[in-house]
Length: 185
Ligand code: S3P
Image 1 (cartoon, rainbow, N blue to C red):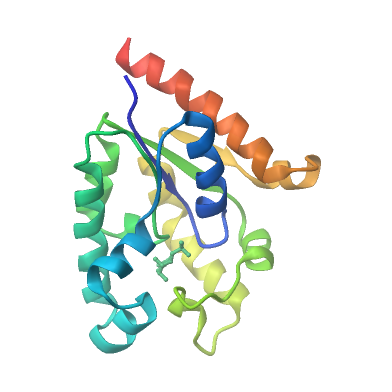
Image 2 (cartoon, rainbow, N blue to C red):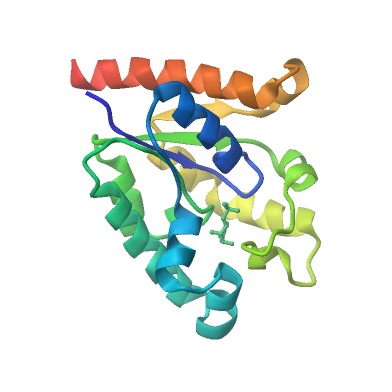
């Protein structure tokens, strides 16, 4: 039986871009949790952080995630990088009806790839991108690993493959199918 697949990892790890390709490979709809949240709140993430604060944003993030998982049709969901901060979300991710894929990479790689997009207010402060990512990596790497069914180091794909995102999506699709076959056997 197919599960929801949830991609977790830091900003810049490729959750959205790889997630889209993975969804196409698995023939499941793709959902970007940040985009769904912005639509439901009728505000951008930057506005939410600015006007209501990070705690209010985290609240909405958790509610949105919970609702996304209620859909019967299995989907591929790109989560926001901070989803794992709340213990309730981590408990939900660890349940067997969700396949969690951690896109793992080091701070230098992530900082070189991450873009300061409007939905990333954590990158808009005075700290350098590398400093922010290094700090978040220290705080979160073990949280991502702790909820993951599959841990995929992304950097080798970027150094070895001509089309890294495509190769990643292909490999992850294989791993997801094998994982789902194992847990439902
Ligand atoms: C965040 C990551 C962002 C977005 C928000 C907070 C984080 O999502 O949810 O800016 O705490 O790491 P992406 O990981 O998709 O950039």
